[in-house]
Image (cartoon, rainbow, N blue to C red; front, side, top):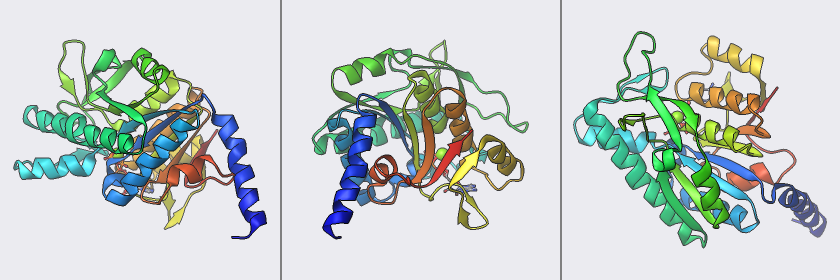
Length: 282
Ligand SMILES: Nc1ncnc2c1ncn2[C@@H]1O[C@H](COP(=O)(O)OP(=O)(O)OP(=O)(O)O)[C@@H](O)[C@H]1O
Ligand SMILES: [Mg+2]
């Protein structure tokens, strides 16, 4: 890289650093993106870095592959409807152990190993995520799967105000205290909307929304709904794109789906003019 290119890159980055100072950046770290230990360490480094630059990062994580592994080890076959996991009375306990225990604490440790302070909580903490059992989807009862009825972000604000990075597992509860599994994309988008986040970034294991083998760099609401209807967007991409639409319709600055297995994906998304992945536009 020559000196001019280097200065140009730095100037580009510096203008974004000013823009994002004190702003909330919500990052959903998908289970699918957590497979590669090196990418995970770089993710933690990026989160610690943007925090040190004065941003207010809020991390919400999934853990699909880890849950599947734990369920299989315990003799349970995973089952999905429309990208949503069916969760029984036995499997909700394992799901909570994996998400709120293993995955959550591992991310906290990783971020702290990069020099920032992080606190791991679940949607249960401080009644952050209020939920109720979801009705049947395509005629199938999903079991202990919740839909969000409200979000309270006082605890997140308090953590950020005291210099801590909140790391949030999507496991939540209903008004009676029953544990419910909630799609982490939905939790992240509701938190981002409630906090009027500047950016919402979904990190997964693909470059973004793919159509006919090619990345769709930007997607309007109407196009997104059409792609879901046509089945081009399916499985785990459906709740993600719906979460992007929620962000768009509820005052979040902008939302993007990016590939979390790419090194320093967050930095490339936040600090360059072009950005990466799929951006949602009105
Ligand atoms: N049109 C599409 N473009 C890209 N990916 C798609 C599309 N339709 C379906 N997918 C699937 O969506 C997956 C991403 O969703 P998935 O729920 O598996 O990951 P995640 O949300 O990052 O992880 P987790 O749910 O564990 O947090 C992709 O790996 C891909 O298989
Ligand atoms: Mg998912």
